[in-house]
Image (cartoon, rainbow, N blue to C red; front, side):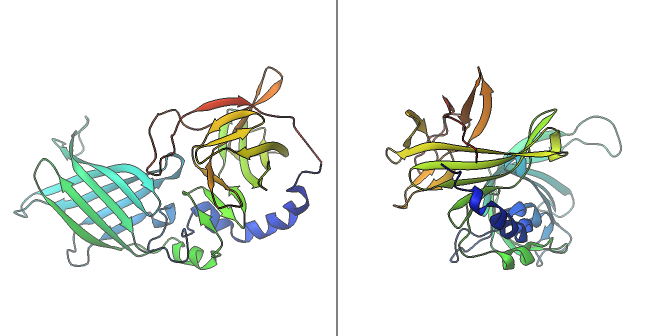
Length: 308
């Protein structure tokens, strides 16, 4: 049976690459009715409240870790001393939930680290490419409030990328994009010193999972590339479980949506194991997502490799 993606790959790749910037930045809103924009490195830079000039924050995303970092520069209540806070936390769609740390006891241009104390929590939500809202709760000092933020430094192609986005795109995080039913993972993933994966395209027709992976023999997705093609039988069992070649698998992240609109959460990686391909997926932390899907790591043996 021919690999389902093979007949469409050349045309699809050209279409995908027209939106490459948008895909890499993960700038696609989850629907045409979305009120915010997905956090991505196009939002990196300086932000401030125009009503409070002279203070603000620098933001930087870490897409590989799905984290957002912030440096918040402000003053104390009296205005006589400067305050420096560091924010660090996990990204979820258009917002990040972060721990706030307060830096003290540092010395100008002197060796040695400053003290870093947990000071509270903050939630940062991006309403557009140029507007955000910071809600903070300082458990130590008792301060809490909400600050409207505006971009201070120039827009890093956020608006242009959003304009290129197609309304049928659905993004589940800053890396996975649903392109008219096929799933595309664009960033480079290093598997070791001499191995990496580039673009991955997945297709699910309700019975079979098919995917292609750009496989490189060097890190950083450099050098010659080999397109690896795979196909596996996949059947839905219920909301959380699916059956893959006879093995039950627990879902992790949104990857596939079947014809009934039910979503299977899964993340895949293929590794050789005792002469066969082992399919591993997930993140072993035992937590439960807000929608009830467990984030638990399972390993199973994959089926037979099929090529054109």
